[in-house]
Amino acid sequence: MINKLTRRAALGAVAAAGILGGVATTAHAADMTFTLATSGSETDMRSVAMANVFAPMVAEFADYQPGYNGTMFAQGTELEAISRGNLTMSIASAQELAQFFPEFSIFATGYVHQDAAHQVRVFNDPLMEPFKKTAEEELGVKLLSVMYLGKRHVNLRFTRDEVDVQTPADLAGVNLRMPGTDAWQFLGAALGASPTPLAFSEVYTSLSTGAVDGQDNPLPTVVDQKFYEVTKQIALTSHLVDLNYIAFSKEVWDKLSPAQQATVQRAADAAAAWGRLKQLDKENNLADFIRSQGVEIYTPNLAAFRDHVQAQYVGSEAAASWPDGVLERINALGN
Ligand code: KDO
Image (cartoon, helix red, strand yellow):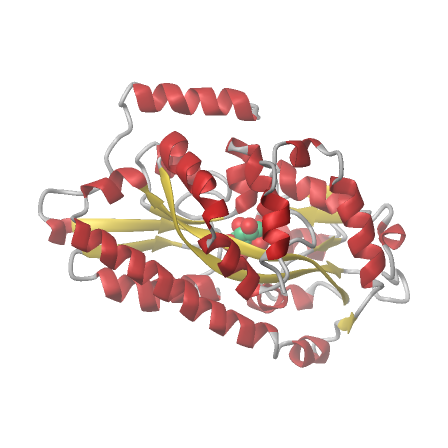
């Protein structure tokens, strides 16, 4: 993996050389196609929001072409595809952006965002402007809106009799699958587990074969991906109130008229809001169904997890990249 500085320099060279190809757009606005790549499924609420809310709102001048389950671009490669002009949109993560710009790791830090509304206040706060500017100017990616993915919990294939998760110490030696980027691996270790990088598309099979002991997606994803078929417990750690960004190609954006830009922004905000409400509703009403599938759900010692996880970030390389005052501002925007 090329390191962040090398990757940043490479992106600068590509941009300077002006060799960013154009997405499939033509002079006739009607012929414009917005491609969207996501490792999520077609039934994932964020995918549904983009197809049912965003796409119709831009249909007057753009066709919408989604690629689900990582089939258009593999998880973690979407931002580079946008930057190189091969993709219009992705449902990006702060963890992926942190691979290019370490300061984005602040939005991927355990126990910082408190809930979906807090995510929205943070994304719309002036503190976000330098982050958005960096992504636009150095990566060619415009962050339009923030989407709610949900509260992430520890989900294990072991029964509670085998592993009873009360504190991080109980996760010692547990092979916990986390997504492949540094920020995710750091969080997995901060929880007390042994993190294993694995693509989202591999999680179900790896749980079923025992290649990994657990994963940490929110309840709606546990249902959407049927992880309840291959796991036996969920400890409600709520270690990350997770988010995604609707990421849009700056190159495509700049070709739009002001009116079209306003419509795209409005459509992204509407899709994010619609998806957030639907995801919250699902998240608040799935526990009984998951229990009915034989998965035990319980609340561990949250203070122990919060204190331990946050202590791991103090003095970390990630924390060193956070601009002064931003964490304090995020906390001030909390409840
Ligand atoms: C995952 O791979 O566990 C994850 O939840 C990480 C998120 O950042 C995001 O990439 C998500 O997968 C995909 O959107 C699929 O739901």
